[in-house]
Image (cartoon, rainbow, N blue to C red):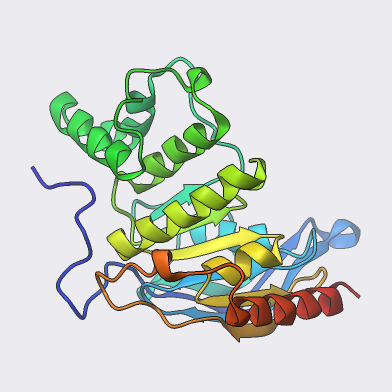
Length: 273
């Protein structure tokens, strides 16, 4: 059996996929009720990047994420993952929502194993896959518990495990830490960086927090007010070399991070005007 979440492939390669939005627009409703959510988006995310989408409420960040997930179709333009047009949800993309959305009647392990089960994996295989992924996210002993027995942070770890169990090439995260307390949020941010370094997955991460964006991302895309478009594409840091884990070296208060934070804060304020 293949391990669900092996480390990055050989040095010089990455597990992540390239993501492109080409001339993408999205309008909800028709006729007089039509409401444009996204103006023209042209975005190119390189394999293995961690790109943060930040901007005012209602600017279309989550809509853009849902287009990549395949939950929505663009009104115009196209979305591609490794040059393949997105036609709907797929196993190459995992999604983590703001709320964990775990099934309360299933154990944590069975929640994580649900994807492999639906894909036809046998009981032993999906149990081993789920357990390996729970260990990766720091929940090695939580498999037999029910979601309601876990803290909010542990539930979100389980939700991340469920998204990662199939080893997707793109991980889409829609404000996954917004509902957590500040300390838990910071701890999970650091754990996310470790998971990203371990798996090499391309990550698109939606947030309202410029602090979170400046700390996590390799790039930050600042969206305008609705209809959303990218008004600033700001490089935060280089993508680490395959196999490297730079999470331990990141300092929330170092001058570079503070400078990035101010650039993003200014851009977000301007975009909401």
